[in-house]
Image (cartoon, rainbow, N blue to C red; front, side, top):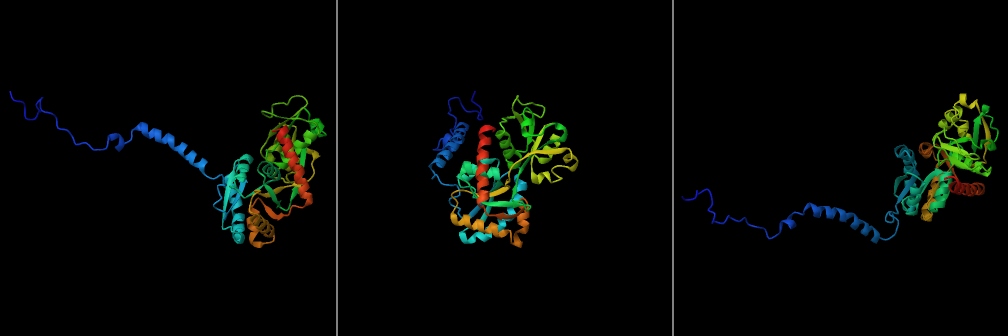
Length: 340
């Protein structure tokens, strides 16, 4: 029987499809090869970065002025920073500045890195954080920042009137509430006062935790109102606050304050500072100083200043302010070595 014409004979070779001169592997990489390439790309990128000159990332943008801020709320702080930056930049065209940018950092360590690498030119901060940036990144104080008419303030330590606590020495074995590590008046200054009285500080796990005998336990309450509430509710034995917040009913409700009394206070220190990176072009630095100082007398700057954390004007750093800053820098270093 003859084979069916639809079926090839066993002896008849099957037709061969034409083949490309390129192998299938070269036409379409395998999954393994794709994974290998993806793994290699980061290495190549790192090698390229290592071969670049060790210069600031902004070396090619000398026309940009970057304003920095340590922030836990970047969106809100951006809206506070932008108006003043928009006011400053057009007034610095004569030194080559034509654009302004804002860069937030999550903490002082990250901001110090930005300053060292030239990614930030100008930072507005509490005086304690400014001293940290000077110590870690060589930042230089530019101007004293006056907010709501006050350029300086002092720290207060307060307790309940019925607590039986009359002085800092009575806090041994007790607890105190600070605000946060960035606060000059509600952390650095009172912490140094306690250390000067020979009272070592020990962080507590909760308000119910107690310090080891002979020390003072501390917690961070994050806001002035929380500090007042914790003291009033007897969750902690003492609280810390600035004299400005002490007089503010939104920080300490009058009903609370009637039950409080102050047992210690510090000397006056700068409230806030504007600082610049140490290697900023001197022409840019001096022009920025001039523009900011003149802003306090310019009606066009009034709204921008108010949004800039309630700033009323910028003041030069005189001999007395410089002495206070040197002392504060020593306090910051002491707290870092003995407490943090």
